[in-house]
Image 1 (cartoon, rainbow, N blue to C red):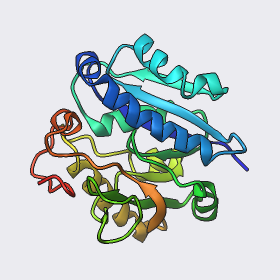
Image 2: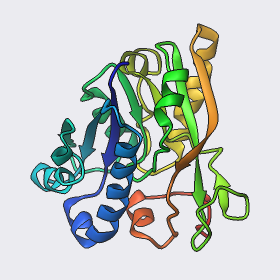
Image 3: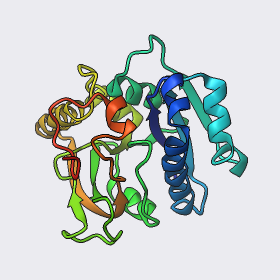
Length: 233
């Protein structure tokens, strides 16, 4: 089985990271732990695009990834302007492997993730797994009473790096906020079906995006514009 690079973006400035260190470290540490649990054969590599100082980023990631013997590439985004699409593209461009998976930095991966990835992903496939978000204070059991499937949020993608850039043309980079870039990237993917590219969209049990309140720093720094976030009223 081929190795896979998990591509994430940590799109906070150094100042924002320092102001919210505990929350950010907690969320991303939980995500990295879920990657390790899902990867007993050690197939995962990690590629991170970040807006804050590389030394600080390496220090933050070392305990949760590098010290477990996992390969890591960190790319510093120049210019200091938030752009989720640019960050995704930077992290994929720096991937260690042909097979990639890009997702939000705090998304939790199910332990059987590799079974799904290996079953679905091919060079002519774009896989958009759908995650579940729990509402604040609800049981962490996937059920309509506890949250909802993010069926209109295509922020995760599994494919080959060449397919990502050559066929898809990379992530849409026209926005400095969350959500519209995901929707337009998925729309662009759907148009490729007429050219023989297969788009797979399915709910993935155990694939969880943590809840963010509308007043959380994750929202403030995400520059959300006109997006109805689950539970964020």
